[in-house]
Length: 160
Image 1 (spheres, one colour):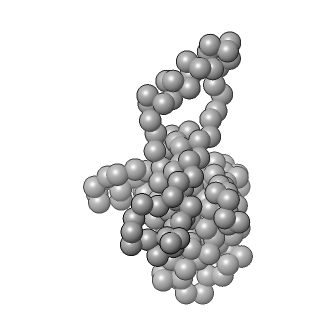
Image 2 (image 1 turned 30 degrees about the horizontal axis):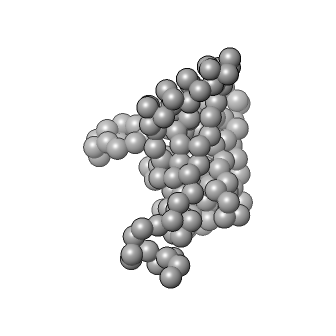
């Protein structure tokens, strides 16, 4: 959902929740209090997040929610088109919220601290389109993951 003011963020989360409820209804599924808390926190946090990380956050709001409920809700978000599962090579699936977001954004992954930074470079995208066009193709989708070493000297995972 990107950088935004607190009011804009609240509006974006509200729109995402409304769209989620609409899709639930279309699928004949019911909203539950636990599911609502999980989905709302997922959209509020708006970052690549694992089921464990989301569970830790959700339990600050609903301590009785279990891992299975969080996992099933993340799976539902993927099925309904609100999240994309990502594997950045560390053995843990993270879920990327994609409501009203360009699903074609790219990623820079720090191999030291595992921080994930999203970016979208129009100049790079245009260059990719040109390269592909020169080969008589058109781009359907792309996935760029850049793995880099952390330059932050305070990185707790810095090899050294």
